[in-house]
Length: 556
Ligand code: ADP
Ligand code: MG
Image: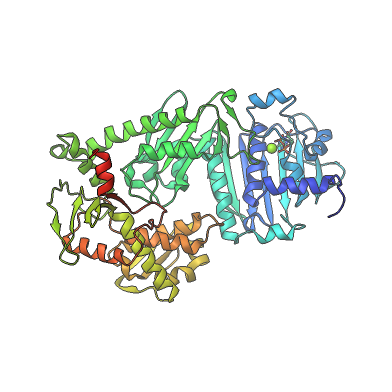
């Protein structure tokens, strides 16, 4: 170990940059935030090579006088905060004065700016070294142009993903601003081509740009003092939580508790492993939140987050249950007794292709031919099995998912996921993003038994699917799989995610009536596994009550 020394400014900035600047999209985020803070009404974002080569943000905001430009790059230089108390009433995106200094320490940045009445000026900062300020012709507003991200930090450069994936992150970032600031005009240019030109409009229209007009039109709305939510009916659910966006005072945030509140609103309306689509805009006084707890401010601390959780859950659920059930279930099928409500919920947890059947299960417990033990299915969800010293309640989906996971693992390890060739290939139109992911991961896909061929521009034909999923819709299978690979956490092994995904799909649904043969087969397969095991998602598959437990309970 060396002796203790105070780090130089350059090292300090590079460390800070590591926290704020993760990838080109983070640069886009910081620069667009500065433009919005400067009151811009029009913001143009240009990226080349996914932003590795170039990120340029042009705005028509208030600009800076020439003598302030060098200050903008100095660490902890900000025009938005003066005292520590101000921290608790910030209404701007920025306030730490960290972003430009960080970006300037890990790339080459040129900034040109002009206030409405002043002269234009420009300056260049490269790897922390600043040029002098020169006069320059510039329109009122600011242009910040960043080139060669992480050029001087090769370690960081290695962590960047493919151009397509980095472009997708940039597009996601712009989409979030576009949706939260519908009154601002946004343009996104990718490699010299215009990808979006969004005139001022409203939130719903902007959501439609990124998620399609059909979904946008189907969105329900709920408004309270604290939030304004747009949320899709349950049948629009997706494989990941990526289409759940929370904004706090215009800032995109992530919050586990709020996410829970949202999922709670959709409880039992969406199959396990899928997530709703929702956009929630929270408006709270600055004193109710602390935004200074995370480097990129994507996580915040609320004063009373559980209250918000409950409000979101109750308000949205009220609207979902009130309207959806009434509209989508034929009047005669509406529940007459409390117990029947669950059967109605079953209707919603069925897949798109399955017929909507309402049935109330009360089969008698009959001994299985194979084991001789008595078993019955409870509410099309659980199996209740009599065992030597008591009884076992099994979650049918969780148990089957677990069995399927082992099966897929085995097949994958033997490099032989059994596949079923389709008689008629299924043709799928892919979005640009999905297309990029397909190109990125076609080999991976094939190793899982999903074979595709190009089919004209923008489309592919699915030729084979995993045999265990032969009765699934190949189109949904492919698109969900592509969405999954795009949304998977890069830190998590993709292989494990993919196997879990297939297992979840192949498993019998919660809510599906099983024949006696199916129940016998399930329990036989399970016998080969350890019963204490959990399902693919880590939940338990069964609980056991022993006779001793029952005796204790009944105080015998
Ligand atoms: P912060 O946003 O936290 O203040 P930044 O490093 O992002 O820190 O920016 C430093 C300062 O540079 C800002 O406070 C602002 O005064 C000025 N600035 C940066 N970008 C712009 C812009 N697009 N228009 C006008 N001023 C800007
Ligand atoms: Mg800033």
